Structures are given as structure tokens and as C-alpha cells.
Image 1 (cartoon, rainbow, N blue to C red):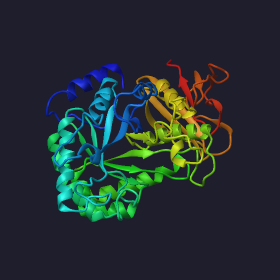
Image 2: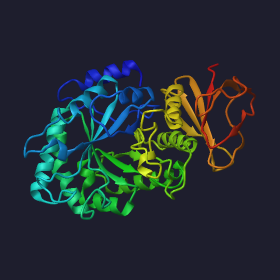
Image 3: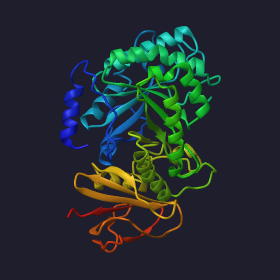
Image 4: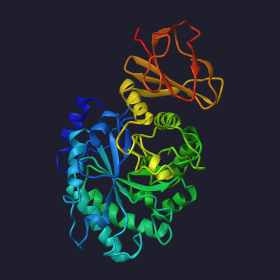
Length: 412
């Protein structure tokens, strides 16, 4: 997103009551984002912007905001400062309206009529306070698992909560979008139950968290299946788009084994590209920074930067992708002999580029593109040899690895 677009968006969003919010275009890096776990206006936000991220996702914790019935404190909890800090840097926000409040509910869920009314009032207060800023208002986090909806997940209770809150949020902030259900993984049966209850009538965008032990490319078929399910239940004429609201890879893998920082960087770049290829407009990487320093705690190693903000290769990979392919749109996947090989043709006006990699071992591939000349960059921004390759009608032969590379083709 260029500065002119940011200025225009800011001016439009500043108009009271104007319903201008939209999901970002399918261009790099308009929909790239990270989960954060802070409020206020720390230097993290500068690094997030400089890394090419244009969204942050953060809990707007109900229990911290409403400590006295009917009183919602957004200033002292740091959310005013965070919101303003993001707006100043051209970063959009996905706020998660989440978790319970002991003033109304005994468990980490919303299961009573009093709780639903109070949750809806808190959601309305948040939307009213930050109206006009194009915020994505997400209804809870991973309500399909016991960790976040206790004593056990309930489709019925969750959908009742969304039904109560969503209309008030839409009325309070016409510039925002209502997002749900932010599921852990893509639980098709659970999602279908929600759809049968009417969830798609109340929301604007469907969010899922496509975590998996496999590589990012395996999500392609899941998105296709999910779109078919949405089409079956969506109200006539209503388009429900999918976003990847949370998804990352820790340096301690699912099986407890180490995932190298290089592999994490590979997965980040490939995840962002595959999401764009499958027309997912928002991709939130989990997590912005390592949440701790325990070498054996998996949750402490999802970050793009270390706990002290020292950049990891994942941060560099995100910045290189965002900077060198800014404004490019994926046109298509080029036809290569091997199904494990990926080559995405990108366009930006008259300019052309190719992002390519393989999920298999390193090997040579020939890219089926017209004769030309270009600059070849690796995932971390280093020029490859030769620095300005040229090729004939057969197309360039390059060495594909699991690290994405970018061929920036000179304009004739």
C-alpha cells in the first residue's frame, strides 16, 4: 500500500458514519499482519511497519476493560494509545472481542443471558470508541476448543453471543467489519454447525486459524473445501470471504523437535504467498515476537523477532518479500512438471516477477516465461549469481529450494 493510498484511506475512514471499510486488495503486502500481545505505543510498532506488516491482531480483553459493571476503560488499559499508534503508522487493526468477565460469567465463556447482554454492550462500546478506523471486529478467539471456551465448546452458546453482539457492533461502527469464528484449525463439522445456526447472516468475514504440522501448501485444498461449505449456507447474494486470522510455525515443532530459524522463515514467506495465491486477503502470522525465553516452551518460539526484538530470519524474509514485491499481485501458478514445485507469476502494471520454490529437495527447474533479463533475489534479499541473468525462449533454468526466490524481470 503506497503513501497516497494510505492518505486516501485515512481521509475516508475519518468521515463519521461512512461505511468505507473493505478487506485489502490481493497485493503484497497489503494484507500481511502479525499477532501482538501488548498495548500502548512501543517501538515494536515501528519494527512491525518496517517489516512490511500492515495489520496487527490483538485481544481487546473484556475482563480488563470492564472491571466495574457498565464502565469500560479503554484509555488506562492502553488501547487508545495502541489504536492511535497503529493509525499513525498506516497499520490496520483486528481487535479480538474476547474472553469472559467474572462480573457476569463463572467460566471462560459466555453462556447466560446476562452475560450475552453485557458482552454485546462491551463490544458496542469498543466499536463506538474506535469507529471510523476500518477495524476488523473479531468475535472471540478459538471458541471451538476447551482452552478458550469453558467448560466445553458450545456451538449454540457461541452463536447466541455473536447474534447478540454483531448488530450492535455494525451499528456503532459502520466502517468496521464483523469477523468470526476464529477457529483453531479448520474444523469443518464445527463450522457447519455454526452455519446451520445462522452465523453467516451476522458476520462479514470468516476467519480460521489453519495451523498444521505439514507445510503451508497443504492448505490449498482446505480453503477450496471451506469455500464450498460457505456457498452452501451463505444468505443469497452475500459474499463471505475467508481470512487467515492466525497461523504460524514455532521453532519447537508439533512433535517437540526443533524447527530451524531458516525453516521458520521459509514457512512464513511461503504461507503469505500461498494465502495470496488462494485469494486470502488477510494473513496474520503468529507471532510478532517470542513470548518468552524458555528453550523448551513451544509458545515462546513463534515470533518473527526474539523476545528482546532482535530480528530472526523470519522477520528478514517478511521484509524482503514486502519491499521487493510491494504492489505485485499474483496472476497465476506457472505450469511445472513436478507438483511439489511452485512458481507464481506476479504482475504490477507492466512489471513482472516470479516467486518460486519447491517442497522437495533442491533441484533445477525451467521457468516457462518469455525471453528476458532480470534480477534474482533469495529469501533474505541477497543477489543470486549471476546478478542479472538473461534467458532465451526456453525460459531460465534456476535452482529451486525450499527457500522462496524472487526473479524480478526487467521491463522491455
